[in-house]
Image (spheres, rainbow, N blue to C red):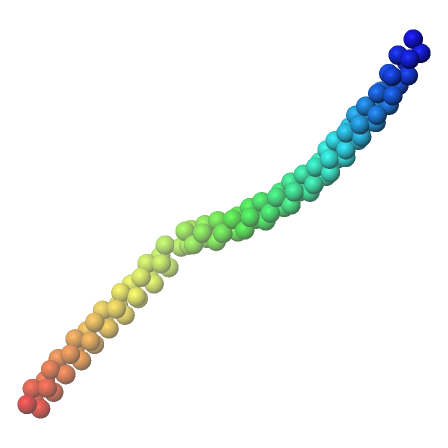
Length: 106
């Protein structure tokens, strides 16, 4: 009986040490992964909040552009169209003057 007890102790001590070491290592890895995972999530959350703030600002700018007073836009559009028409007329006058000058030179 003593021989059996000695054999059991000889094998049980190293097996217990190996299992304990594995459990300790596993626990340490879980703690490290948990700490790193939390930090990564916090970084991602901060990045998403910054992006959200930027997008909210861009939407605000777009809303202000869309909701500008329509009469102001209409007056501006009329001025631009008048300036374009004047430029076209001026270009036509310049082309006619150039053609007349070329005929006179011949």
